Amino acid sequence: MGQKQVGMILVLLSVLLFVLFCELPGPEIERVTADDPSLAPGESTILHCDVYNPAGGELTYVWQADTGKIENLGDRARWTAPESVTSNLIVTITVTVSDEQGMMDEESIALEVKANP
Image (cartoon, rainbow, N blue to C red):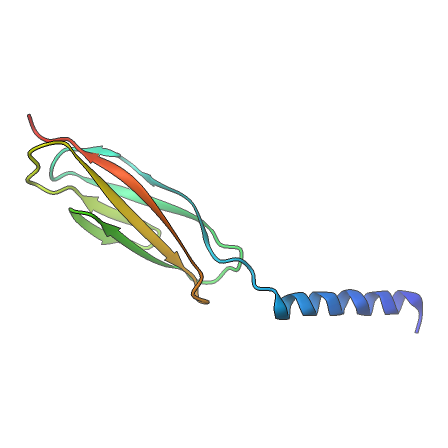
């Protein structure tokens, strides 16, 4: 066996060991944004979740809000502010992203609901 062939075998073994024993990191949320971060009571906005997913595969998104109505649309969500707001309100919306291996990341965004004068 020549030196070139031995080198190639070592490279292939290294790649195989990496694939077998090294997990790729899970999904990483890069940012969560809202089309409109300041709303009147009863108004809606679309939220967006940008994720870096080095392992590939399908992701699951779970959206939760302190108050108001949240509709899960995968990497997006529609949030509707509560109707009856008597003073300005800050609402925290959290998205949890997980992959098929159970690796996850979580991020939050704060939205403002301005009470009617």
